[in-house]
Each structure stands twice: as C-alpha cells, then as structure tokens.
Image 1 (cartoon, rainbow, N blue to C red):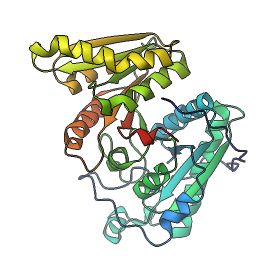
Image 2: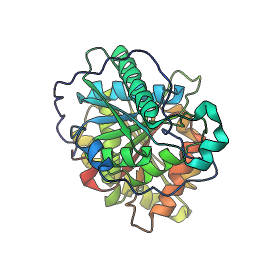
Image 3: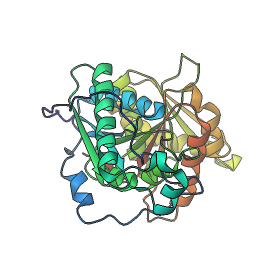
Image 4: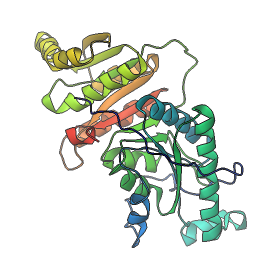
Length: 333
C-alpha cells in the first residue's frame, strides 16, 4: 500500500535577507480564463528537474498570505513524512501588452524578477524552518512559467502544495489558472490550501471514493494521511439511484477492507448517501482538516466529470484539499 518513508538528504536552506517583492507568476496569468500551458524554452524544464531531489515535497511560493499558508502546511507535511522540502518560486516576464497596461511601476527587468523570485523563495524557506525547526529545506527560483515549473517538479516530487490563489499585479479568480492547470496535469498528488474557517475542532480526514479498483490509490492516500496525523478517517460514497444503496455499502466495505488491516490505528467511518459527489463533499468539507479527491488520468474521458467535482469542491471549501491521481505509481515514490 503506502511506500516506505524516504529519509531526507542533508540540504542547506538558502538564508533569506527578508521578504522582498514577490515575483510575477505564482498565480500570474490574467483573470479572463485559464490559459494553455506555454511551450517551455530550451533548458527551462531541465533547470527545474535537475535541482529537485526525488521524493521531495514541493511548495509554490509567491509571498502572498495564501502561499505562506501553503508553506506552513507543507513544512508540517514534510516533518510528518520525514521528507525534504523544496520551496519553488517561478517568475516570467509579462507580455508586452500586459506590461504596457501595468505602467512603469511594474516594468521590471528579467534580472529584477529573478532576484525577486530568489528573495521570495528564501523568505518562504525561512518561514518553513521557523514553523518546523530542523526541517531540511531547499530553495529553487526559476525563470519560467510557474505552471511549467510546478508540473515538471511534480514528475519527481512526492507531493506538490499550493495556496488557493496567488499574488502579483494581476490576481486570478478563485483557484487561479496555475492551480487549476497543475492539479489537472501533475503526476503526483497536489494539495491546495484554502483559507480556513473559525471552526477549531474538526473531524480529521475525509475522502470521496467511488469504490472502484481505480480509486484504491486515493483511499490509500487518505488512510496514510489520517495515520500520520493520528486523525479519524471518513469514507464518503454517493449514488444517484436509491436502488443502489445496498450495493454501494457493500462495495465501499470491500474497497477499504485491506486498508483497515494495513492501518489498524486509524478509526474509520464509512458513509453512503444519495446525491451528487460534489454537493455532498462540499456540504461537509469545512468540518474536516483534509479533503481527499481522486483525479482520473489527463487522457481519460472521465477526467471531465472528476475535474468538475474537484473544481466545485475547491471553490466552495474552506479547508485543505488533496487531489490524488488514480495511477498507483503516483504514490510509489
């Protein structure tokens, strides 16, 4: 089921001189819709890939409060899993038309943007170390589209963590194009840290499961997170036709039987309810510390349905959401 915990290699965090100006990019594209992922320039992919230790937890940083929340969550997760943390800040030059509309105040040179990205990554690393003393943290600043950087990082990362929206002269709506693109295309699980609620006592981890063989990696991820945090786990399964109620309960029980044995320390409650998955999860998401949702492969037809569920829950929930690929290899890192 869950793989062995990776032991972190020694890594020195780049010291931060302070919280400098944020680089454009963590959620930088304009708010009029999700843009296609641009084609990387030669060397951009290699720059990010060669500096990320396989099995690391990668968190995107842009200096915003939302990103800082993600950094703190990622630091806790890295400490739980005993993995190194990589703080990644990516910046890209604004198109000429956009730069002209922003005026001289935002007319930054490439060197200035890169220095800002380095400063942002260093400040975020300092925050992570302050939050979890002794945690091995590396920083990585790259001059490329943040979507490219994060998707490439996900190829070797164990987990990618993002804030709910980003920071910069042009802010995005709701989830933002960077988060929306990364959660759909990343090879590893993606965690999006939404702004929380005032509810202090929560009910641990909840996972939406369809009780199919393809959903087993999602259930495994949820069990593992509940085990790491010593929290209870709720399995939620929905059905539309009431004649499937009994069959649904049996299917859920069978799908989690092996995990109960593998994670005997986790208190599990399975619930089945009639209705749509997005509505059922959204209604109770805020009562939990972590909501786990599955994601079909990017080239599958079902990705449209599951993608709509993920987006609906992400936009409504005020808690942390994990989007886990169905491919079993995504967790065996």
